[in-house]
Length: 117
Image (tube, rainbow, N blue to C red; front, side, top):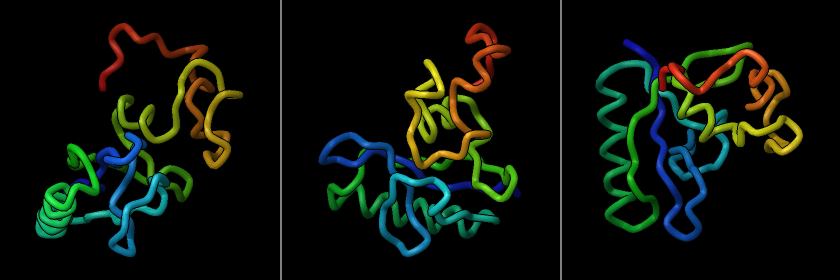
């Protein structure tokens, strides 16, 4: 079973958020609750659907993640961009993202054409 977290957007302002370990929602993926099996993934989906119904989050869905140097890291490029973006230049990235995960630091060798995700 792959590891997964739930993401969506906060209804109030559109910020990318993740279902947290404490059951709340957080903009930090490293604070997300990670499902390690299908039953837990289903539970996280059910919690997210209830939060969507309560108008706390918009469009929640599961995202495959992996561990990179102790950090919860999305597998797909699209989700890394949502978690760590923007991709234009590392200097414009979020301050709370470790340098090795910042988008744009890989811009020298990643071309958007043909990138899976």
